[in-house]
Image (tube, rainbow, N blue to C red):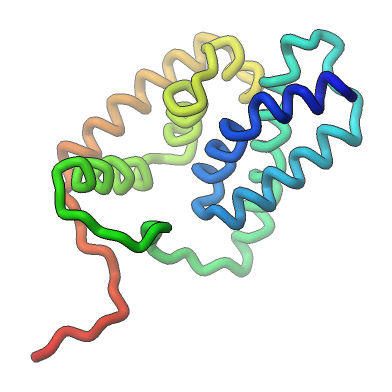
Length: 169
């Protein structure tokens, strides 16, 4: 259990970031991460301590998949809004919005592989273990995901987010 606790502490921020990307909100990510920690501490970890990190991410992913499937029945999906509520009109923010919108338009397998490799920093072999697929599949998915993201960025412009404010006529 000490190895699992240590791995949780060392990877908490990355796990939270991954959970946030999967779930789309800070609150849902916190709940997801708590469920992951409870599950990880209640079952036997892998025998090799070096595999615990990937194991934690796999647990998190599997819990998210289960919750996502359950929520499909009753959930209404709305537009993502920025968490901090502040808007600065600069190139960095516009680029971030463009990439987020393009990322949201990707197919779920493409988003998932980009999150694991590019954002969470997993090696191909670790991502393959998390996704339970061969390393070659990870490499080809990553290649296709990168191309899809570029196409989504190039093909789409920044779209206005839905507002609740009425425009004066």
